[in-house]
Image (cartoon, rainbow, N blue to C red; front, side, top):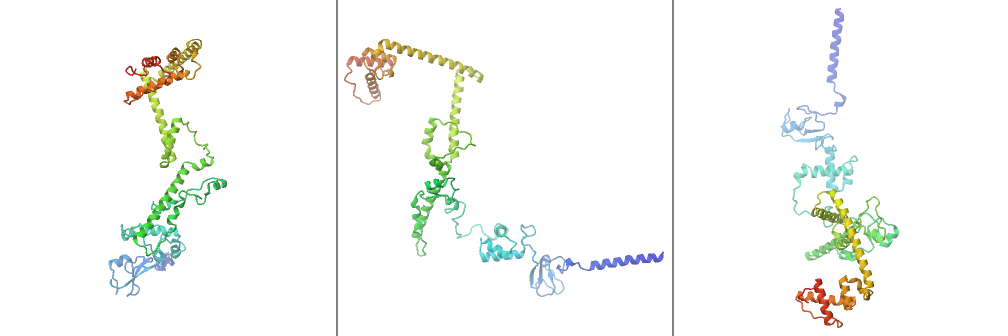
Length: 447
């Protein structure tokens, strides 16, 4: 029993010794690591090596605190040692750029210049694309904290970029070609249209390019000559804007398909309402304003005007109902039916009376003048007057027009001479004046 116990205790002691030897023995993964000689922290990625003391390598925290160990002193020279995996912007920075890549990036920006992202990406390394290089440099060195601290808000004597896409004088957005027209080759030849350039053989203001065709930049030009050349360029740019504006208007209102006679109606769109004659006249009058509004804005404008007219008509109808004592919409239907019957009876009565009057005129007093020109323009009383005076309708209408016109001129204070025809004697004139006075055409003082 005792021998067995001693053997067991010897086995335990042997196992502990082997475990301690394994702990003391460094692992294969730890052979390439470096540690701070002061705090034993892992400094494999970044460390500061003393140039005067051998095997003295400190971490950044101990170096900044001025740690001293053995013969090493804080004022000794040092050397920054990078293991190649140190990130300048921290591990949370996007892309995981190492310090070596950052140094290559700064060398590339100095060597190749801002914007040459392809050559810069090749200089940094094959694992970085031009898009990644551009995004990292712009985000970290321009818009990041480093750029905000180094780049001032207002740079003196800064060159203005006139080609910027934000609406500058030479912005590409001002002269960007529109999508090509969807027309056949024969129609392109008919219009002189070049689809790949979105140009025409004969453009608006065809000779606009002559303003700048002879311009050249000379170093011996004085200020006046430079300003004159800039004015020529400004005039040319304005002509280009006008040319582009006209093309946009033609696209907006489908003028090209309309000119070619193939203005197809879109089946998917709902049918448009019927346009009245008054609206057509208004559209024709407002046509010069179309260039300042888009097609949709114009259609919305006329659609709103149509809605306004409909609302006004509905309001007048409701006001008429209210004047007639109708307060409910159910009563309006009965009112409209009764009004329709009443107007129909009145129309039938007028038709019967006019027919009876025509029949009486054929057999009686109107038989002498009913076939003369102008008879249908006379009222029943005027027909009686002309028949009694044995005066033709045209002569009566001429005398009537002259008398009423002279009367209106006298009321306005305009002197006028009597221009009555020679066939009108005093008796006829007096009879006609009395008739016009009784009918209310002229006042009694004029007669």
